[in-house]
Length: 161
Length: 277
Image (cartoon, rainbow over all chains, first blue to last red; front, side, top):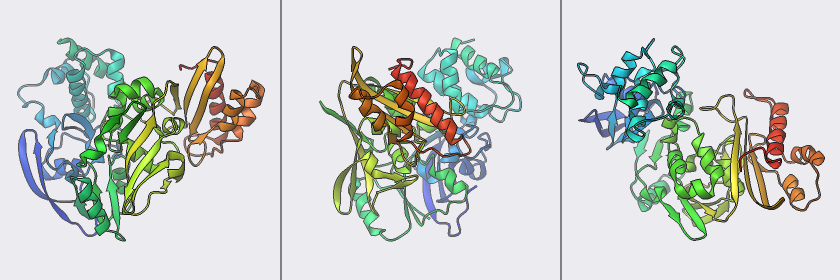
């Protein structure tokens, strides 16, 4: 969480998970803190806070980004999808289902980022190779699973299994 | 902290001029700047975000040159066909740059103005003789990249000035990029090298080798390459010729001795044809 001795405010318009949000926010807060603290969307996690781990990944204007490396004001006029916006909780996406089926989740902290990265990869490359999956996941760190099951889950989601 | 998102160069220049002598920071991709604030760097009174300046995203291709807008993202460099075909060293550096999320956000201009000795795009840009196009209160000027970056984190950017684009000459040379880090991705380079060359039969007609993380700025191994081009050196001479141009230091990522050895090994492997290119 960033702090500023003389906070200033900005009228932010941003579409989050399909809903237009208008808030007067301090200019210095990060997108991650805006999502978690202001909107209560706690699916995006903070682990490293410097763009190394990908746990805070969200989709901004169609691309995966680290929400800890972006000020909330920068996304004025933009479109954001967080893990909460991917599907309603009663109906998982094929990717989420595949993570479940392949037991790709242990502690779960990295998983929102992994799932969003996997979703965007399949949009671009519907049947990625394992190397393509690993390359795309290079900005997402998991300290539990050893990655094999995560790669399996994304691969099989691409196969439509 | 006041936040601004100008939408035209005119608006930006007037705004920047009106804030002269105040605490102003320009924000490009933010992938380096925002975590520095998180680590305690004081935030400025005025932050000007460049992301709505469409002029800075243009890539203009001419017959003999390409002009890359400063806000072009690393991901765009990975995908651009001309960069892929004619400036492989830059494309390869962009491909291996951090992770996907940072490639989507980080910019070529940010990588240059950051002036990190380890900046991965820099060796390729030096080796291709990149010229930077700047605009400021006194008008436009052009500077070769090696005259712009003057030390770690230091550039000759003047108050109120901005990097607009990067110009590269197109020519039928080949190139390649090599990076050694502590892991494949998300790793700051221990050594990074670009090789730009033209070679027919066994002779180089053109050879430029540039090297990052071994000196305060990227350096060109000109003492080595000039003697290879005129045939006055043999492989036994190479270590001393490389040593003459680099001045690595010990830091948390590697020792100076290791950096020297890796540089020598990579240059030797390239010259013996063991590296792609």
